[in-house]
View 1 (spheres, one colour):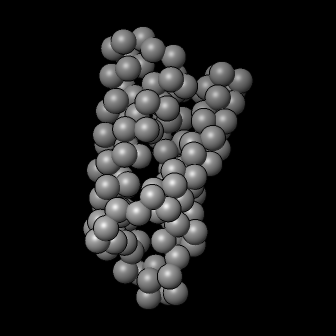
View 2: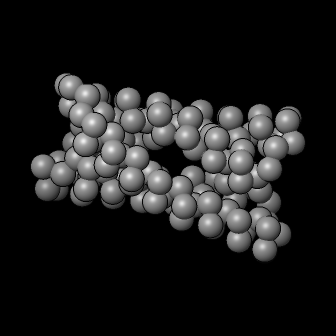
Length: 127
């Protein structure tokens, strides 16, 4: 198991970096320039990053050669749970505690990244 984690973690982090840049960029454009609600903006960025992340993680990080609906469903489940947790955090941090939306979205992305890696490693792509 340790070998599997050490092999997939660096690739997952690269894919996560790409997905995060895309996620945060869309969040920024929607929230800052288009004045969209913080939760809508963050969720939209998250979904965009999710789609790109699935494609890259499925074929590159976890080296699955074919598309499998079961893997897509598992991926979606893990990321949906992660989204719920991160959005709850973001709602409380921004709307209840009055913290900076842009900084708290970075923290929310960090929370979801950790949850996503754990979920993909031990549920969706377990050996």
